[in-house]
Amino acid sequence: MTTKNTKKKRSFPTAYTVLFIVLIFASILTYTVPAGSYAKLLYDDGSQMFVVTSPDGSTTEYPGTQATLDELGVKVNIDRFTDGSIYKAVAIPGTYEELESNPQGPFEIIKAPIEGLYDTVDIIMFVFIIGGIIGVLNSSGAFDAGFASLSRATKGREYLLIVIITFLISLGGTTFGLAEETIALYPILVPVFMIAGYDAIVCIAALYMGSSIGTMFSTVNPFSSVIASNAAGISFMNGIWFRGTGLVLATIITIVYIVRYAEKIKKNPSTSLIYDQKAQIEEKFVHVNREIPEFTSRRKLMLLVFSLAFVVMIWGVSTQDWWFMEMTTLFLAVGIGICAISGMGEKKAVENFVAGSADLVGVALTIGVARAVNLIMDNGLISDTILHSATNIVSGMNGGIFAILMLLIFCVLGFFIPSSSGLAVLSMPIMAPLADTVGLPRDVIVSAYQYGQGLMAFITPTGLILVTLSMVDVTYDRWLKFIMPLMGIIAGFSAVMLLVQALV
Image (spheres, rainbow, N blue to C red):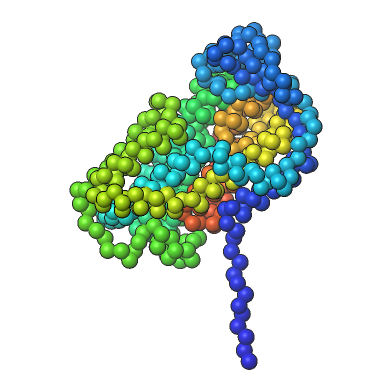
């Protein structure tokens, strides 16, 4: 009697499992890392007073003047607070105090994802509305007809899709921090790339890495360059030419890397890192067995309205201080308009909208669990302790070594604090004065902060990458296999750029 090997092939855990592992690790840190906090300074525009919250939670008001800032050792111009450039609480140098430990146990671990969902409801609603619109466009045949048309237009020059999209997204990242907004683009562009002969990783790389490189080498991005420079007490124009040069070169490096991988799998699809998932992803996004509908004027108008919504969104975010409330409102209005244009009737349009939203429930849950990791660390009072420990390591060091070590430190901090503005206002008032002690300009610290956090954004589970991968059904291990060589190249390039900036 013969027996068959029925051993099941092991698969990499889902995004939820990866995040829960990180969540448990963060919880363990709250037991092992001492709790502590810096005093925080916040400007109250109504009373025109500074409100200082001590580590023990007590608050004290101070006059909203430059003299107060000088007295507290916050080397920032008062105008940065009064004009709203710095709108979050800023850590006050030299005020770190150890606090009673507040470990986060099993109950807090289970509760954190629920709190994370509440805390990110604005992003989740944006995702649901986008999903609803995608559902209507898919069911109307507008996407199938449009993708077929685009595929014919780029026949023989498909690599231009990678070049154009990566460049444009990088431009959005460096100017206004284009990141979460790209979530809406994956259901649209994944089929385009797959019809062009590439795999879903190529689309993820063009969008995600375009955004990551743009934000990593931010020039005028208000959520990193501007707020970090303000918190460091310098103009965001300081060091802008170094970061601008880095942006151009890093974008070129990234495009070359993606194109080389893309052309390799175009010639031999079996070399794709996700070749075994090809049929599954095509079934979800490309609908290869569906007859391609005619690209009618109605379908063209639906896609035009949808495309123009992104133009309006970019205008609103970059010039009108829009955020998720305004963006979601815009796309809800666009969704209603597209339903009306589709001509499929109210009942069918609503059914397709709801079904499209339902397809992204998994993405919404991923967003909530990712936020839970940050909540565990904040509630466990260890984020400031990690920052305080970092300042002790670099104090009084050689300038060049100091710059590289700052890059490494911000990589670590970027893992635990993925919010660019949050890390800026927490770390810059503490880290920037350290540059003075080793004879370096403070813009070196701003660049180190951007490069370190930007590098970690390539892979950190607490950022957007797992949300992105769950949208496209690509597992984390396949992404790591693709991105780690590029991450090493960009890390080396960043270190060289930082040394040049420090030594010139």
